[in-house]
Image 1 (cartoon, rainbow, N blue to C red):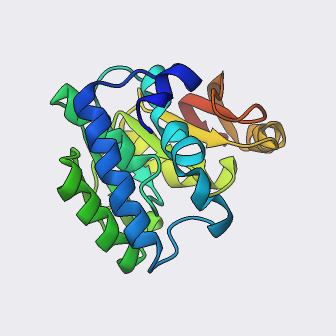
Image 2 (cartoon, helix red, strand yellow; image 1 turned 60 degrees about the vertical axis):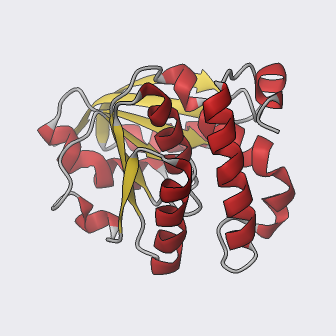
Length: 210
């Protein structure tokens, strides 16, 4: 299925990355039969709905860097990002997930695919106490912008060049409007190549209003 990504979504991957993605997909299917990694209604759309949706981040951030992925769950986009970084041979993803069963899956996924990442079984609220500020923060289907910004604030304070790369669905504009009441930030909207009514928000210069 990975070879179809380029034709359908314009997402090019190397042969090695394709093989890593296919290993991830096989492992995901096995684990998803035992624990709840994604909504059951979307299991049949693993490649388009989840893998390709995560993989398109490489078009927004083509260079390697240090990532923190919040609420990594089934590995989207964190493990997929770590697989892309394996192609670079540089960069790292710290995957933050408080559910121990999901952490077990994430560790296995990194080991099986050679992804450049590590798993941190901590609550998101506590992650900033142990993880240094990254270059990028990702999150998918986790929380609204206001709460995501609150999670990210300690790292944004430590690294003024931090960027948040956030998947958002059709209601993203209302989340932006709400967040503007409490936060100052620069925003670039990237249209999703997977979902017509979805975007990826690139947030920088995040500061809380006094």
